[in-house]
Image (cartoon, rainbow, N blue to C red):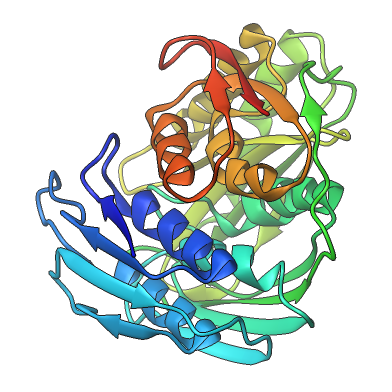
Length: 338
């Protein structure tokens, strides 16, 4: 049994999700302790419990400690079983994070799977649905994993009740990659969306962002979209639509002007542009578990984050790969997998 200290490094839910995903792929029994020990509400929250229950279902695992507030979990998988699954988080917890927890094993299963998840689709502290659709899954396709994503209903905090659907076509083998050079920034796209809000909000978000990007000397093709769902919300995404994709987003909030939403997206994009790296900060930590399972060496440049450093540590508990990085947290660096 592999023992994982859930308080290591960044010490959040990512330690749990990566550990469960690798345990499922490698069919290893694991014990995770000190789960989210440093958080104000330590232990499993409903969203994390949904991740555990989802991966338990697709692996027919024996599980002990799967309850809200639990700080210790034992997980013993018994295979990977592709199929048709439905999961309901029951709160506005992130559907994206639950999907990411089960994508790793399903991407290496023996057949395709269909997964429907209810919860929050565009909520704080997690990748929004459209980041998965336009950036994450596009990059996974380069590794050999093909995923079709549909947004059935938008879900905001605190109401949730959004719904996403994924069709996962597994890869026979993952492809190693070398993503070392920054994009050319020749194709920039955007999405400005809202649900049950005045039309001018998404328009102002789009116009402000377009002005920022054009002042940099780039062109931006941006779509304005009215979504459907429970509750109100607005969302803005900018992405680089080249072979290597990157994305930057922000959510609206009560009392937060539309222009502030656009400024937030622009500043994140500008920081990435100035760093001259290939992968955006969030993509680096999300994709490294897949690269670590691909035979042969891989590398990528990115902004080194605490999430990335923590994920490297978790991977090293499971795999005998030499994973190194240069640069300090918050700075550009090179990640190498030998």
